Length: 257
Image 1 (cartoon, rainbow, N blue to C red):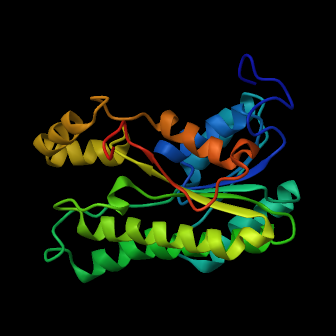
Image 2: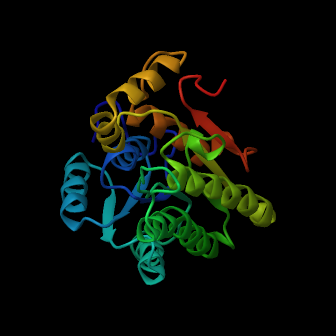
Image 3: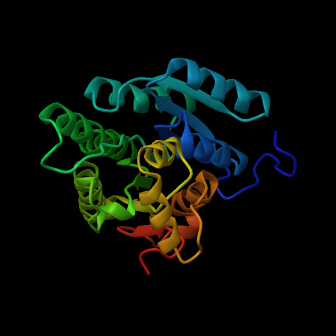
């Protein structure tokens, strides 16, 4: 167990949280943070090997963690993510829907296959997660956080298909918040700006000048870290955000201020 953390302590003490897209980047560091904050965590992602390594790491640190592998764009796999959580932990209190892929290129240059894939993962995948998680929380309430992007409410050259999906995630979030508030289910989204993830690394390699220009426009003059983004998600999942629903929280160093 992480030094300074004790059973029953932390922002998410006693919570059962599902992290979808929890194998690398923001998702992996969110899983680490949620566990350190007292949650029992179910990890879900495509890579069995990476999930196994992260599960072993967290288990060895004294945390209560399990994992299941699957594709977020496949309905049966997403249902299994939630069923595995219920089977292992008995209930679902919170979910962080973080699975997503990027798609670079102008809208008129993106292939139909690439467009369909990014939509399937980022939009259909988020909807499938919401559907199954809401079913599991219908009688007990809970909190759901979706990962959008600052690209979800602005435009940017060369990322049209990706940004369209992140606009859609915001629409799903706000609608789900309205639909399920009477059930005691809060639904929010985080909107990261430039963040040091494999996605940003790939963009930097492909177009370093564009990344440098973007970071220079950030008032804090730096990319965020995956842990900083995870901290925002943890707060939204916690009871300290008990009156917060339907919100899209920028985690962008002031870029959209």
